[in-house]
Image 1 (cartoon, rainbow, N blue to C red):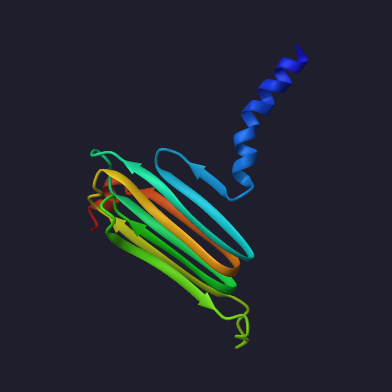
Image 2 (cartoon, rainbow, N blue to C red):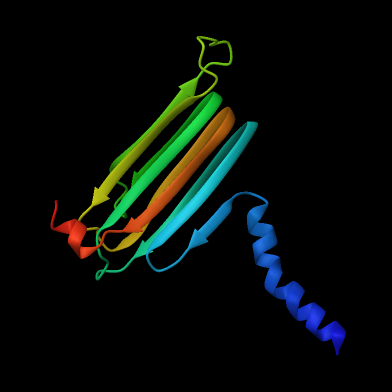
Length: 145
């Protein structure tokens, strides 16, 4: 009986363990949060977010801090149209007093169209970290726009 519980526990934990090997991911009905850490490496990934025709407005947020390299994040709507993005670049030889380059970007999509939205993330010989958040905008916040 103990081996059945152990097998069941391992089955439940497997997706969590394999997902943390590449990045941290949190998702619920109101937000998606994804953290990426790079250690002098190249990386490319597309994250698909499926939105229905009854979807409330969304806010995309990107944050980054890199010691060197080049990182780029882009938002593409289901038709492939560029909706915004963010990039950071710092040469390894750039020693002008700052250890890291930081930045952030926010984009509100008030009437997101139905379909698969793509967030493209790429890094070239990068050491640092970036964070992606997709939030549902509350009705009170929409009145401010």
